Image (cartoon, rainbow, N blue to C red; front, top):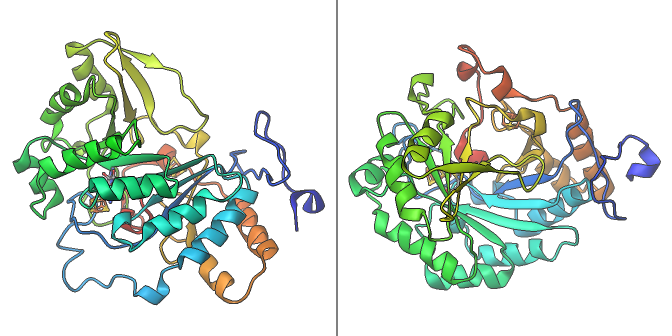
Length: 357
Ligand code: SAM
Ligand code: SF4
Ligand code: SF4
């Protein structure tokens, strides 16, 4: 069923209107614009804030291969999501570059009419210059590389697999060299762990063209032992940087952008803060998440996902998939971060490594 026949999809002012585009809104009148696709639940890092070793140890049951969506299944779902309004796709994980031949998936997604942006988030460990070129040639537009410190002892304690800083810095240069610039660099800031690296990270990336983004440590999942006391508020991060190099706000480029942007007044580039804990942005949240086994999550903090793989594998048509996705989106009323309280972190929630950031 398409939007005209169903009569259930309201137009959003300012949204692109094309034959291939239906605009579906949720209960809080938020459109569906952004789809994050987790291509694997596995990772070669054990970041303490994401996949702590005590939980994700040698006996952890990761998804068996047959339960992962194939590239063909992912591309088919992506096409249906685009028909429902999605314009931006981001591949994530786990570590997306662990999925063999990811370039083939990128090429399939890049070929979908209506996809305006195609990005990938990686820990950089497998991002060699050759891989960066292959990703770019396959049609990747942008890349985000995660790096939490410039000090090996701090970074290695955080990734918990002894991975050195230098290799991630090389990966960032490889990405830029392949034309995936500007590279975004994600730094999760945790109180007492890497808060003192904030200014050093800013110093390092100023003037390079890369955009450093500071992320407040979040209570995703139930394994990282999150406490509010561990969060360094974005306002404090900005104060520390402003004291060194004055900054000023930059207006958002797109509605629903998660990072609040700032630029150095001396012209040395931009930074961003993702203040999902202290300044929740649920009001404009237009993101859906697809897990590696094909479940749709309408919030990063959701307790359960909706099984699209079962539908796909039982022979559903594209129209049936479209109805299922738009129906779920229309019922969506998630706004976890706005409702966060003493009690909410204990709710059962999906793990970040399962659905990606
Ligand atoms: N493995 C890839 C990586 O690390 O870039 C992609 C997946 S990772 C889950 C995506 C992003 O989520 C990373 O930038 C990571 O630092 C961030 N992240 C993971 N756990 C987090 C948490 N508890 N709070 C805030 N950000 C988190
Ligand atoms: Fe792996 Fe990324 Fe999670 Fe670190 S943040 S454990 S690199 S998925
Ligand atoms: Fe979106 Fe959920 Fe995050 Fe709010 S808490 S911004 S609804 S993902």
